[in-house]
Length: 52
Image (cartoon, rainbow, N blue to C red; front, side, top):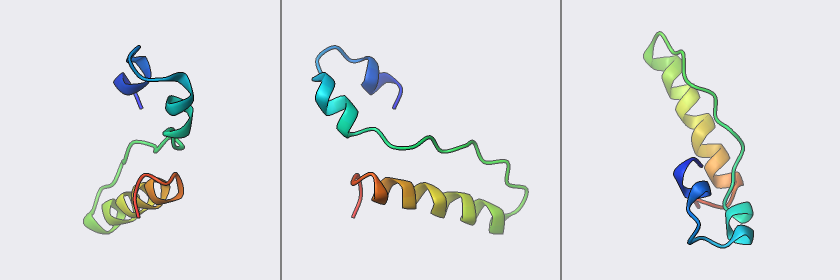
């Protein structure tokens, strides 16, 4: 979560709660693969509770 994790104004416990698994950089060469990569990102956001 980059800069958010470095922000000293945010409580340590909250930082742990809002973390989600790393999403690998997309190496998609076509739209279909990009769609798959994007859907994987959406799923990780949902599973982390950051999105409904």
